[in-house]
Image (cartoon, rainbow, N blue to C red):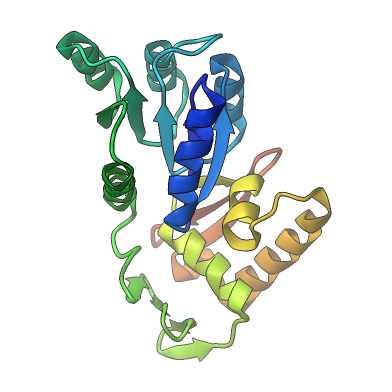
Length: 231
């Protein structure tokens, strides 16, 4: 999964990034509130770890802006040295899902990150097998069955299909997909992404009659939509 960290202290950003990466996730860091807001508009994340005191816009202002502006928002863990009960209450009321007061033990931070990512995951996202309509995914064998018929996919095609099903009806940025599947956002690799999505769409017959369809969100990324029968 993909986590964005916002803190005005570079050493704190690096500390939190190392925790996130040890958990096997991708971490991106920012130190300016305005730059963070611009990023949240054009990119997808599974979790935001947000400091209160930052240049540009502070953490509370960003929380309120997210609530008013973003149709799809990542859950937020406030991680700050402000420990007054009013500050905690204000942050939670503004939309934060959790609140950590610095300094905190590394293991505790890791556990809170894991708990938040699990809480925000789509049902079945951490199961070895999951069913989405006529599609059944086996994450151990990396196979997909459609109406009982096993479809041959490469490892990357399976990872891509799994990512889309786990995030059905959620718009995913190109950066999010590239970093999650290929661990890169290199511009030269975008043709690879488009080719793999085309193959997954074709091999799995992601069409309305099967209940799903991949849409291109121009200038942003892709979205796997669930399609009701008869639509």
